[in-house]
Length: 129
Ligand SMILES: *[C@@H]1O[C@H](CO)[C@@H](O)[C@H](O)[C@H]1NC(C)=O
Image 1 (cartoon, rainbow, N blue to C red):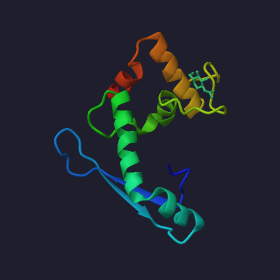
Image 2 (tube, helix red, strand yellow):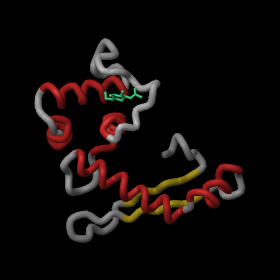
Image 3 (tube, helix red, strand yellow):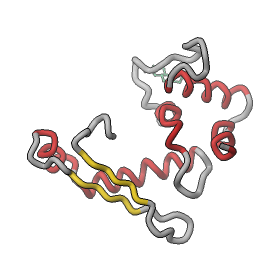
Image 4 (tube, helix red, strand yellow):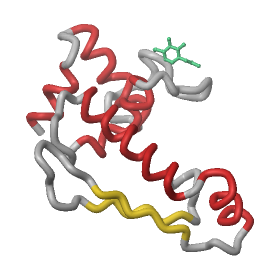
């Protein structure tokens, strides 16, 4: 999101927990007079952004079998793979020389571990970290 909308300041605030997990999103267009800021206000808007942030985070928590928010930030490219959003330039399976060569290669390594060890391996690893 930050790469797509550098003008947009997204503040994710972990607010008071309501029951299982309550997250309050604060979204602010801090450059409303730029072309991107105007487009954001016209085409995307704060209500949509807040809604999609909730949907994205719920998807991440479901993949990681994690009922509460907080930990999955470090494995973003694994989420890109799981969401089937890897484009043509994304690392291919078995690409790279080391598992930690880069985010995309790490994501492929985790995908490989899921297939080799067990489905949900990455979720379990994430919970242990
Ligand atoms: C994304 O990754 C999946 C799983 O490895 C693969 O089947 C698919 O072809 C990839 N998509 C692209 C555009 O390379």
